[in-house]
Amino acid sequence: MIGELYERALAGRAGVEVEDGTGRRSALPVQEWMALRPGDEGVLDRCDGPTLDVGSGPGRLTVALTERGMLALGIDTAPYAVELTVAAGGPALCRDVFGRVPGAGIWTTLLLVDGNIGIGGAPSALLARAFALLAPGGRVLAEVRAPGTAAYTGPVRLRAGQAVGEWFPWAWVSADDIAGIAWESGAAVKEIWEEAGRWFVALSR
Image 1 (cartoon, helix red, strand yellow):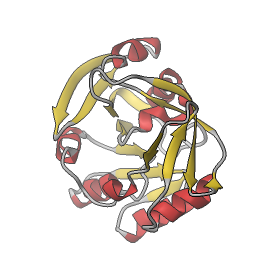
Image 2 (spheres, one colour):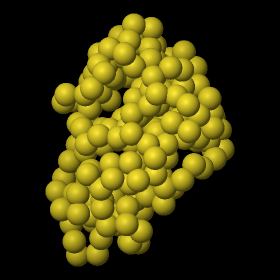
Image 3 (cartoon, one colour):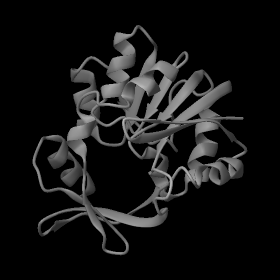
């Protein structure tokens, strides 16, 4: 049901929400992921060398980097998201970041945008995995929540009306918390910036 509801949202059907373990719900903002939006340019400009876009969704960043002449690869666990990326002209594979990922050790930039630092519900473990995929000196560019936003680590699920997906682990990380999380993975915050009301960090070891 997770994949079915996510694909429903990617196909443009409204009404898909994400619900956390406390019962709080919010709209799944899939339409924001379909094309470049304010705040993306700063991320794209900071990509240096081969870039791995983790949780690439419909692939707007992967496609934009490819159009800039850069080597980029999107990975996502949703086959339909990968299909959308490829159809738009970006290379993408259906992969789990914690599984086998092509090019491990060659990537110089790894993206965790649109809240994807929450993948797996353990941000420090995700960052440790990210740095294992990066070349020495590579860095992670991640989108975080605004300062003052409450963090959350726990189960979430997708729902649309009476259709409810399975729970899966997730985390929402604020700019206030990222330094400690980075430290747990052996990394440090090298830059933090705000653009168009969105917050981002650059992390390196």
